[in-house]
Length: 183
Image 1 (tube, rainbow, N blue to C red):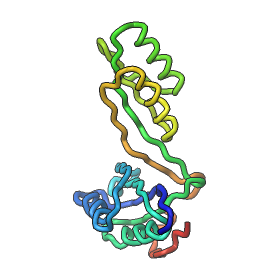
Image 2 (image 1 turned 90 degrees about the vertical axis):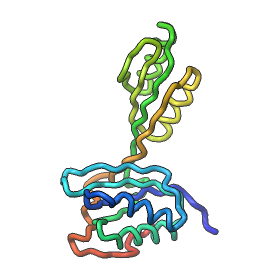
Image 3 (image 1 turned 180 degrees about the horizontal axis):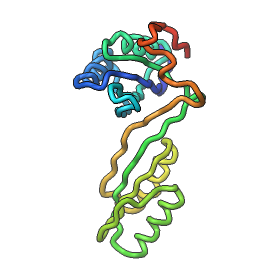
Image 4 (image 1 turned 90 degrees about the horizontal axis):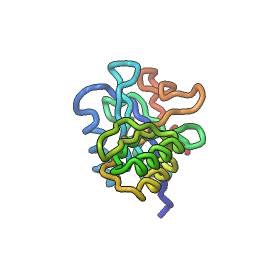
C-alpha cells in the first residue's frame, strides 16, 4: 500500500441544486472521507467552485479526479500542487473573557496572529482569522489557555499561483484530458 497524503482538488461545477450532493456521493461510494469542503459562486453566476481536501495516495487521487470529470455538471478538476498554489481557511473563535485583564490578553494574542475582533460582548470576545493550518492551529492552541466557548472553521479554499487558473482546462474548451493531472 502506498502512502496517503492530503490532496486539494479544485472543481468547477454548474451552480445548481443537487451538484454538491453528486460530488460528495462520489467520494462516499469510493470510500473516501472529505476532510475539508468549501463551496461558493465564482465571478460567473452560473458556475461554482468547490475546494475539496481528501486523504489519498497518488494513484487514487488521479482516479478520483477522473471520476469527478465524468460527472455531467463538472466543468473542470485540478489537483493543486502545494508548491504551485496557496490555501487559506477562515476560523471564528468565541472566547470567554470575564475580566478586563483577560480581555486585553486575548486582544493582544489576536493582534499577534493578525486576527480581528468581530464581536465584543459582556464576558466574551469573538475573533476572526484567515490563514493556513499552522496559523489557525497556533491561535487555537494559545486560546485554549482561556475557555473557548465555540469555534467554527470554513474549510480550505485554494487558488493556483501566478497566471494559471482552473479555467485553463475545462470541458467548454473540449479538453477531456483524463489522466492529464500528473503529480
